[in-house]
Structures are given as structure tokens and as C-alpha cells.
Length: 180
Image 1 (tube, rainbow, N blue to C red):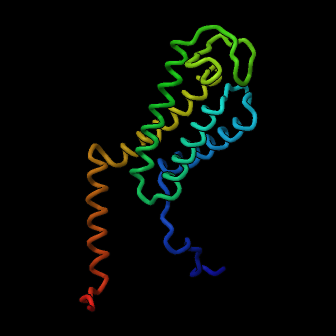
Image 2 (spheres, rainbow, N blue to C red):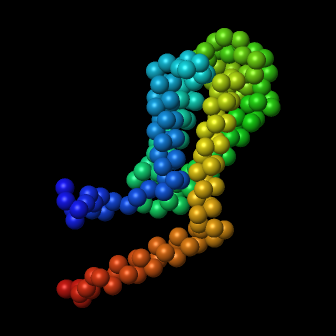
Image 3 (cartoon, rainbow, N blue to C red):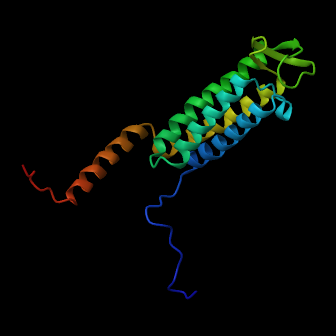
């Protein structure tokens, strides 16, 4: 390869920002964890019922889609913010309200911090709380990074830019009258 030659990305490729990368990676991890929970409820010492596993698959799929295939980072920000608050809150509530008990789902060893929403349906142990808190912190970090880059009016600036781009794109097309 000579000095004048260089590698260019494929046509239409737009580089991803940090928020989109976090959404993509965490989404893939949650989807794999949910799919593993559907196969084995005690995966990695967690308490994964079919409903909990399905919830992880859906959250992972939405995060993965908005981080990887959407060109607008605003959707990745929203997903990181909403799911970060959900998983972080679930981890915090589990640590606060959890009591000692024996779970009936997944890893059935005695758990010092078991939070039961419905016996045999949704149960969260100490490891579930730790995992939920870590996922929540990572996703909120992605959302805060987007907010830091965009400023207080980030959503408004993105909408204005999208409208401007749409107007410029229309200028490139030649409009012809309809034939009857």
C-alpha cells in the first residue's frame, strides 16, 4: 500500500459514538444472558425464570437495535436512560427490600438478600441485584455521556439538524409534475 492509498469505510457507514457502542454491547450481553436463562434457569448463579429471561431478551434486543442500526444517537440515549433507570432501580430496590430466603427458581441455594415479587415467577437474589446495578450504572453512564456531548438541549439540536438535512436532501431531487 502506498502513501496515497488509504482504507475508507464502506459507503453509507457512519461511525458510532460512545452511547451507541454501550447500547450495542450491553444489549448483546443482555440478549445472550436472557437466551441462556431460557435454556438453563440457574445460569451463572442467577434466578432466571422464563419471564425474567424474556424480559432480558427484549431489553437486550431493543438496546442492540438502537445502538447498532439506528443512525440517530438520540434513540440509543433514550434506551440507555430508560433501561439504565429500570435496571439500576431494580438492583437498588432488591438490595433494600431483599430478605434472607431460599429461592424456587434457578440457583436454589440459600440467598441472604432474596427479593421475591411473585413466588416461582420473579425472584431476584444478591447476584441478580449486583448484575442489575452494574448494568444500570453502565447504561446511565452511556446516557450521561450523550447528554454531556449534546448539552442541555441535545434533543432539540438533533431534531433541528435532522430537519435541516431533510430539507437539503429534497433540494438534490428534481421534482417533476404528476402525469395523469
